[in-house]
Length: 426
Image (cartoon, rainbow, N blue to C red; front, top):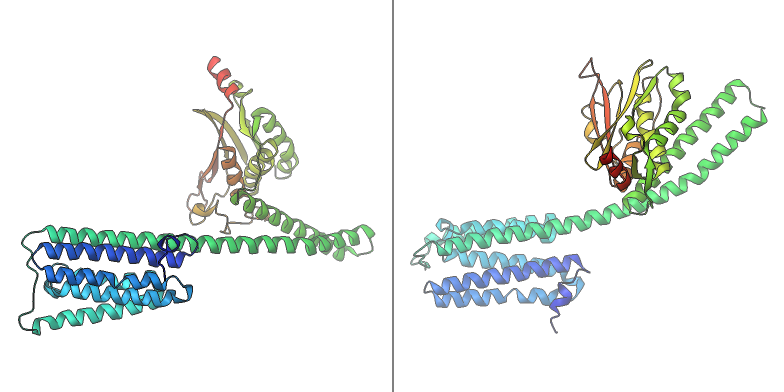
């Protein structure tokens, strides 16, 4: 059977690739030790260790067929135990300077065979320790004399290198597994959101039809309106989830252009005028005259509806009646710094680190019981980052600060070149 090493090191089969790389690493380190031992005068022992290194080659042949992967792993760990025991035995045993190599066996087993490998490698390690412990009862046991620290330094470097190499392989394996699981979850989420949308449309449609017919009594009519509102809320959640998934997959197509901050703020005030009046709140927008003509890189509809409207809506939701919501604008190098500040209940310390997390539920009722989806802020950050900007938050909750509570959302958007030129001229 011909040995096709290039195929074994390919990225098509992760398990085979890891075993092949680990095998090559074991062969190289064993050869290094055989040369070192030979240099210290034990040529016969060095030659024997050189032949032991060749015992790893059958692993590469076993890997040629996928059904032999487990056998290859077991063989490799077993041969590793034999090599370590053989090497340490003639360099002082457990009392020698390189006995720590026994500890690599459970690590190798865990990398190659997971929990079963850890158990198998641990058993082999205990067996190696037992054999090395019996060494002192063997009369005239042969030792390789090490006159200086070169052997010890080389051994330690090889050990650290092997541990680092194994850690790299583990991280690579774990990253691929996590990516595969994430892809499966994303596909499942896409299927679920798609399948929920169709029956939800039927529910809301029939509820609206019954309301329009006017045949229901007052309690029934109120229940139907609640069904419609609940359906709208679920639709909003599905829409946000789809947008977040699209943003994470790089499928959310955003064409940025020059967007006027002054015009955007005018539209924002118009959108929330009625809601602010209902809660007796004020929206103050501090846009200095020198920034009236400033334009930023963004998509105008998303900036208004998905970003700024989301921030202001949250400020209204979590602020008491009669409070003031303030938007301030300042320049920060080539960015415009937009802060949305409220005097509300703030964000609890335990929720603050996860407020932009796609998969962490941070939805809370507002000061008057207003409901939310919990997906608005993660989506807003994805969109802002697609603009080339950033979105952060600072908050002091009422649970920890009875006075001066509230949240500040800090939005950074890149300014257009024309706006920068005008600002410098001013």
